[in-house]
Image 1: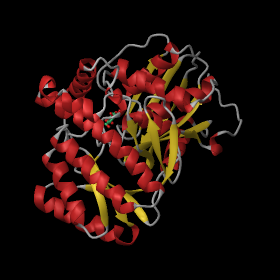
Image 2: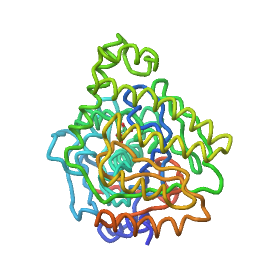
Image 3: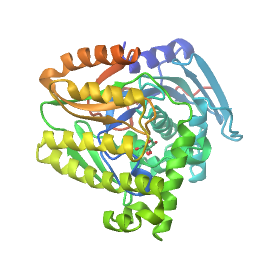
Length: 390
Ligand code: GLA
């Protein structure tokens, strides 16, 4: 059963009526441009055909009551008394409610059923998908205008200030503004988006190492802080304003680690722009080569790879028809992404899975992804019936 049918039928079972709305927000893979978003740089992600779905109806009061089918748990909280809790999926709902209120929106309560198929903690942005689905749910019942960029910023604020991860804007922007069959070249300084068609006759494959890193947040926040310090060394607000030449002149004064961190960011921005241009002219080999170079830089200069990520990237590259591969998202565990010729995709999935398992002893999960639209309210949810709960 598809997830929209599942959340709808569970809603019907629990509430005795069909949902008033069904919303969906996707996860993402990032083809290239890793750890550049919080440096005002460039990213090239795409929203994927894995998403979080919520079936819901408005409530007459200011309570939020949501049942997660994935966690088999229900959360309930009041919009009038938002209190941070533990690291629980419901914190993303509360964080979005808090950030929407902070942005001046009058919110209404709602109740519903939630399910998703974006693997959690795998670097495919299950949290941004949950944030953007939650924002859509609030939009349904509270009626504020949906502007993808503004809502993405609200989601980022929830993540930065409620959850405490100092993430950039990439994940929320992609979940909010994805375009089917396209990657998005996002300039994270101006927030301008340029859709880039995916290369023909290729597929994008997400390779989940099935490993997760618990210190992810502290390592991530450490990278953010070091980049800020490197930019400050140059008297600039971000590394976007620092050139490769300036960096090399300062190498000794910056010191080894800070220099390598900054070199990753500065070279990754260049690779990302080049990859978008290569994709536009259909140069798949060059796109893949740039993805390979991105992984090397993330592994050696930024030091956010892991044994399993390196193994799955190496295995992927050895397969016929693979143009390039790199880790995805923050790193330290989770997924890699590969660009693969469509004709060899099935064989690629089979052999890469077997070889990775043989090397690491861990069974991977490999998903062929298509590029999806961003967060939306599905049409069949807008039936106009008044199911307002007491
Ligand atoms: C995580 C963050 C993003 C981005 C990536 C690395 O996914 O949420 O903002 O920084 O890591 O590119």
